[in-house]
Amino acid sequence: MITLKPATTANLEYIEQLLAVNGLPIADIPSKLDSMFLGQVDSEIVGIGGIELYGVYGLLRSLAIALAYRKKGYGRAIAEQLMAYAQSKGVRQVYLLTTLESGFFTKMGFEQVDRDAVPPIIQNTSQFVSLCPTTAICLRKVLSLPKVMFVCKKNSRRSQMAEGFTRIFGSGKVEVTSSGLESSQVDPITMQVMSEIGIDISLQTSKPLSDFDPANYDAVISLCGCGVNLPEAWVLRDIFEDWQLDDPEGEGIDKFREVRDLVKVKVMDLIERLARAY
Image 1 (cartoon, one colour):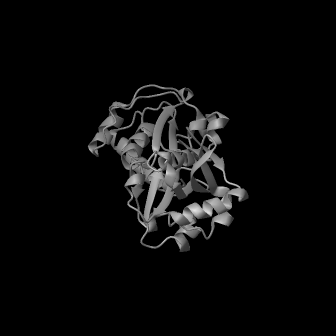
Image 2: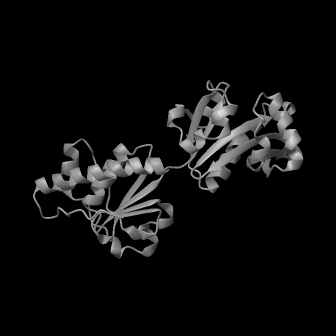
Image 3: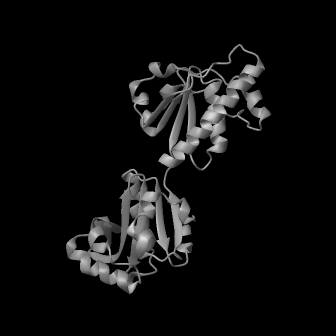
């Protein structure tokens, strides 16, 4: 069983030597020592790794295994523990640069991304600015997606539209749930007008807000002006908005279409903002 131990100044020389042997940058290690960890099995140091934390973003770096302990799965174990640690600190996406074949990291769920797609705070790290060559491959792993809860009175029309749009256009970017101050059923006309534009919400169900824990959500969107009636814990999430959209209940189908189209515009904007923020 491998465990991680924070590096100290007493480990600096060892870390620099191991990185140098593996052809990895060492120039900034003294200033980044608080981001470095030792991988230990019993009392033996088998490898090292680093994770720099920048809010919701992390930079995985300086992963190296001592020669005598290679091909034992320790590199992956250290990387996975570093990412678990980062996630416990609120990191949602981890980036890295590598000059080696990227298969080792893609097997752990990393995917190649253009440097232009990397958040500026990561682009401005020493690894990106000067230490790694411009030919290095940039990889990213999403640890968790922002979660949004759409709420209206009965979770029958507006919030169901919002959930449907978010599932389609926010796939891979946002996790979504909808609920109501009370549950009822999904309005058949709502299903019809969503189906008209190719979005099937027939498997969505009406759910009460009380079934969910606000701590599990980053954004809470009231669609009906019911924000004043929400428990305080929901209103105090990172993002809270009250869109106050008309309820088309009892109206003709054209009103449902009008509300549908407005919901789409607002959902698309929300997805873009959540993607930038998280």
